[in-house]
Image (cartoon, rainbow, N blue to C red; front, side, top):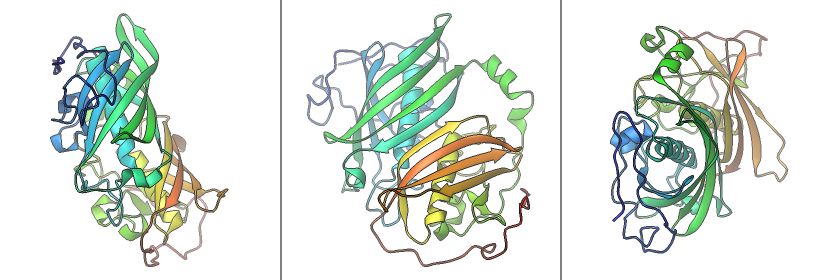
Length: 358
């Protein structure tokens, strides 16, 4: 049996086995007898407070910079889900890749638990099967991730940064791939980076949400956009009480909230046709602060085939770009959403006139 080592507060972690070849054992991904989907990995390895939000279920090192990971998605997730529940939400791919980068950093390269990771970019694309590869079945979706690390940089014997690339399969079918660039920050460096007092900032109450059906959501609590006087611009709703997006206490807007804002903005531009982001790439330029307004601006670009539509989204705070997202959306099979308008729809756009966060 391979060795599975849970993290301590400091020091490197042992690599559990090597020489693994994917697809050589039924239901496990290997011929070692190790069940990659028996239990979740430690929540500390993926920076989650809730065990139910841990998607990774096993890992083995297959080389110095190569790893094999198991992951599992529930049949229906409480937040990451699509209308009609016929397919798993592709944004789950991004969250799974994000968790993979953290696990590899901690368990594979010995990054201590109290260190921080800065995600500089994150993206994914579905495979040739498209949404069909994400079909919801009678059981959870058990996945295998073949992870390779690139541009690995060490400093004083410690990991400083790396890029993870993951090829993702489900029952032997390649359903997509994703990648992310991570930088490791020590506690002292993080305190200098963020400045004194950032950890005790009290976020303001989030502004009123857009109508949920306009952005592809069923519940108002899951809406991360608030309408403004411009039809292509929204105020970001960062609700620090959200049980998934703010799974644990943070002193800044989390990266997955940025991806969700981009997805909802793209859906708003396509309303009433339901769409899904089959490809998404996000670059994070700077931290988005919780106590200052951040605006989400989206542009729907021309589609080459009439079906796959690119959307460019920028998040701006203090007049500067904080993050940029580029999505490619495709229609989701299902009924069209009844046409509805925001309270601000139909009003003339007034340049520079935008509501501020309360």
